[in-house]
Image 1 (cartoon, rainbow, N blue to C red):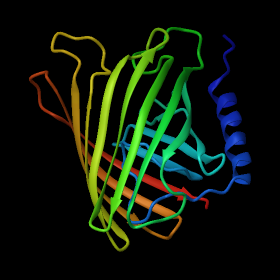
Image 2 (cartoon, helix red, strand yellow):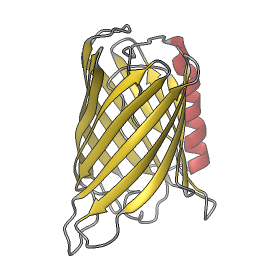
Image 3 (cartoon, helix red, strand yellow):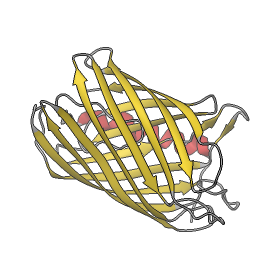
Image 4 (cartoon, rainbow, N blue to C red):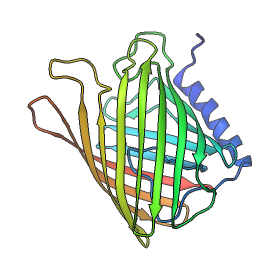
Length: 245
């Protein structure tokens, strides 16, 4: 399999992102905001940057190919402490199975996605950065009183460093004008094998501020726990998203 350097792959993915603006599809439902750990169930053109604690800076993009088909791109993450660029890049194709392509106060969205993660280096990848294929189902139920969104998926490892297993993310939230509050939870077993099992869980209280119709700023505190009898891990997340439709 042909491999490319992280910078070359980054340039290719950015070129695809810029070219995507020929398709305009603002299918985001009204009265909802994306969650920090959940992929959207709608099609849009958007770019985002996220900061996890003081350790990891990541960037990605959502691309609208038309009103029913879109793409997701995950660029290599930057480790702030070691100044190292991750060799893992990701991309996926999203197909809307159900849902309108215009903002509505009451709507239901269901999307199927096939996503791959690829390690750009030839050496064996560390856990979590190997080649993986992921199939998942995403949904969003929006009502005037609030919203419920989530994703259910399964990873298939294609080599060393890939972590197979299933995962479930979901959130409940409500928008109050420019402010959105939501509570996200995650359960998954995509962890390296260990003596205490592989199931991990997280809870994320989140606050999102709609700075403008195109800019979203979100802040959340993640509490992660496993079956290991140890102190839960805490991590602060910051997300900045820019929509282009």
